[in-house]
Length: 262
Image 1 (cartoon, one colour):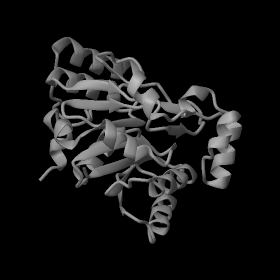
Image 2: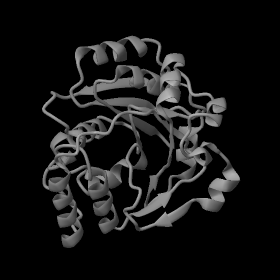
Image 3: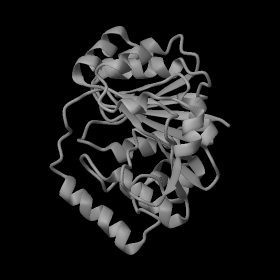
Image 4: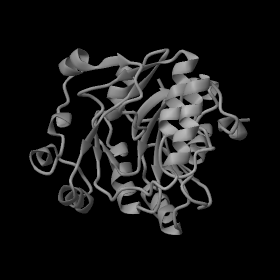
């Protein structure tokens, strides 16, 4: 199965670099990496161009003009440029354990989308990871806020991974789905401007369409670098869009990925 990895980013090239390096070092590499850039400065493009000269997979820099937080649009444009049948989404502040793509491939299933978990790194550990450009398993002894998420085990993954219809814990910093499934609900809703709820609303439409959520535990380890909280001034408006989708049982958004498809 051909997997396209999408990494979102905005003006944090240091974190993006270690995220890309971890993606290159996979036991099962994605067929391509799309960097979904929501308007970063030119130094991010320069980094991508430099680091991908000797990259083991195809890397595409999908940039859009900076007009505020437009993550939904950035992701739609990136998804439209993928060639793989299966999409794995991560954020640019996420490092991938070397079996990350392999684990996602193993858990993929027709009719399902996958919600993965995060290993939360504190500020001092995040600085160490950025300095050394690698996440060592030894680091899990210090500076990890949810240490059990450091455990990778096929046995525990089989025992504790579960299906769910809940919206609780939806985070697209470690999330996967079939490309055709995303297109069938018109991708992410670009009415969302500013941080928050675009991932939950996308999930609601997938569920309304008949797709089911599967939570992957103890596999697909994603190490989340510490950063300050995002601006949430648009959250109330975004909550209204989400609630409207829930109440009306919508499966389609008017402003979505169809704008970028041939």
